[in-house]
Length: 97
Figure 1: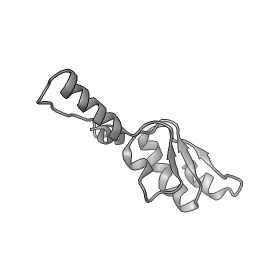
Figure 2: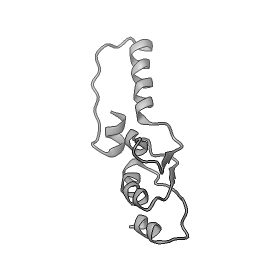
Figure 3: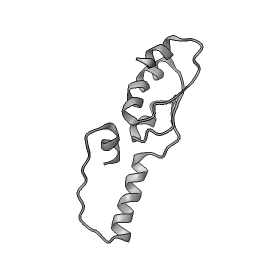
């Protein structure tokens, strides 16, 4: 795995990526143990930047905020009071749901 190569290379001081939540969850524990900071440009699962990971950063907003904004829109703008939430069981889907 590329994360292990990064962790083993003393010239790597920071990483940009992963690009999706699933990929980033694969990198996160390796880079965290190696104390290599990373910034994900687009991973949105809320657990990517949990408080226990001080090397984890993101540019994209968390799904927690996106879900809240979507729920507010459905309730206040569309006037819907009953909804069903479905997801595909991926890290992205679970985070957004």
